Length: 120
Image (cartoon, rainbow, N blue to C red):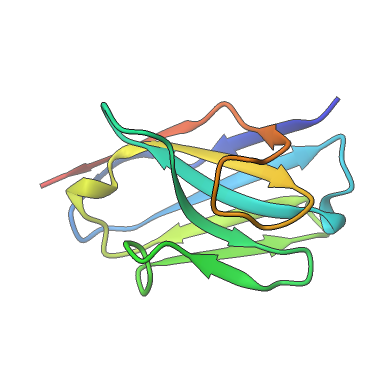
């Protein structure tokens, strides 16, 4: 059974930082693309960042230069370092896993999400 468990969400002031983690189990982590998505209040789920199994990285334009995605295959964990955060980053953040990197929600597995709130 595949499980993706996000952690690290919380409340932060604008300009601050948070680091999200997603621990994976039940899948061959090193062979999967990993991604982060977010869903703000009243909005559709949107792509944030992704990293392929061979470490190619993709970002949404809205987070380029502020967010960094990374993975540790030894720990079966993917991270999202979020710096210079803005109120519009407020959302539930989801971890996803799949065979290839896509910027749509067509991933095989999803976590339960972690809330991130940025106050102005």
